[in-house]
Length: 221
Image (tube, rainbow, N blue to C red; front, side, top):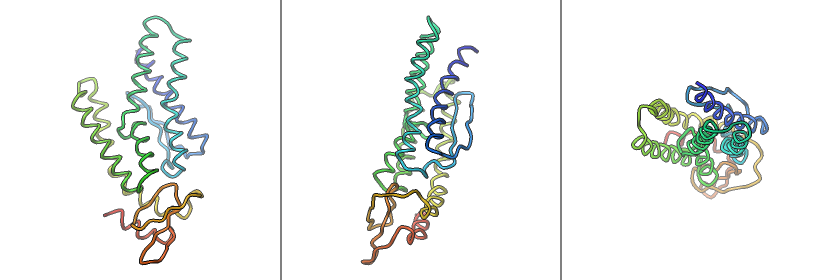
């Protein structure tokens, strides 16, 4: 029980750093779930803040392992210390695997959203996530990993259902989004996060607010 609770504490400290960074950037906290094999921070307005703020919130978790490493060296010794250091590295590496909803999957998603159309970025993130999950399943499907793999498998379906719901919600909130200094002119029905989008249609220029209805229709295509 001591070894298990120590590992769970490492995971919780990781999640607390996500939480503190989310508080710093005024995210709307939904809940923190403590699972038998980990923890998960739920934010109501993630993907509605500037991308740089969301990346900071995601990176706060992996960066926390430097602090945890120092605490382990200072507060433990012997075989117990070696175990904690190993678990700290394993939690760090596992969270960087590019599978949704792991930190690695979110980082990949945010990077894609910063350089390409929002809808395409979300579905490409899902494809990468499913591909990496299949590799992980083929090589690490064992009795002691079955619960975690099952959880990640279910999350891929949740993410698939989440994408169209999120897009509709995001497009309807375009008029009230944070101010954006950068401007992009689109000649197709695409949308770039972090930019004030304009659209060239039949020789005329339309503001993103005028295209909300068309963007929502495009969600189903």
